[in-house]
Length: 102
Length: 181
Image (cartoon, rainbow over all chains, first blue to last red; front, side, top):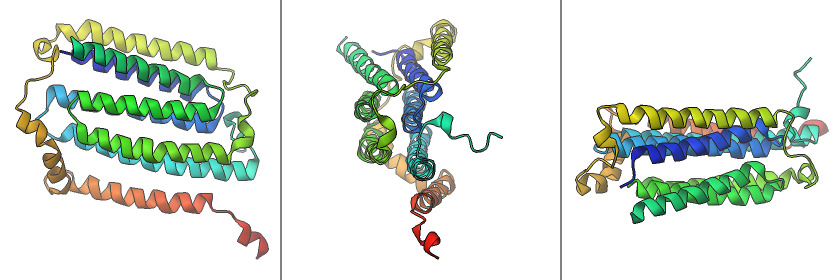
């Protein structure tokens, strides 16, 4: 049988990879993809705790579905923002979007 | 034994493709690797007995979000030439932070979980009546529409999806008409 810590370690590794992508990538679309990795890692944790601790209650599944819905909305709005910014500034590199700096 | 080998295989493949997602210079290849990562996560859901969520993952992530991201990449294509530097100046620090985060969490998992009294329960999945697992989707659906459970978050989520739909159309629509007026 698979111990619970294996799933948690897998989710932690996925989260760490996504964290690195969010902090290190320059392209905003790549940052958005890394955020999706983070949300997936969180969902693995939720399902793992649901299966190992409270399989008779639907709370873990319900939260995972809400995370799924929020991820879908986040991807749609994020890409709309990126396309709008690209149209106005001709760039999707995060460092060049510095209108609010001064 | 087979379960453990299968889990390790799926985990290694998923993490490998996740690494491709965050390191590949070609964004389109990164998006394709992202789809494989989502598939690996869906298989993990199946091994955890959450088949409904695995199907939702296939539909929403692989079917919708990946395609949306590929559209986004294609519409902003001029900035993703392969010779451009994919990482910013804080990449080294970010790598250190991510590795340190993983090591810290892994240390907590490996060191402190086995000392808890519930260890015997966590070493393997809680034995549960298969009827409860088979019934989990029914229970989930009833919880979503039950006033005693999640009907309010459920409705708020639907309003949020509508707001996201209208908002993204409004943000992304071209402003040509305003210039002509």
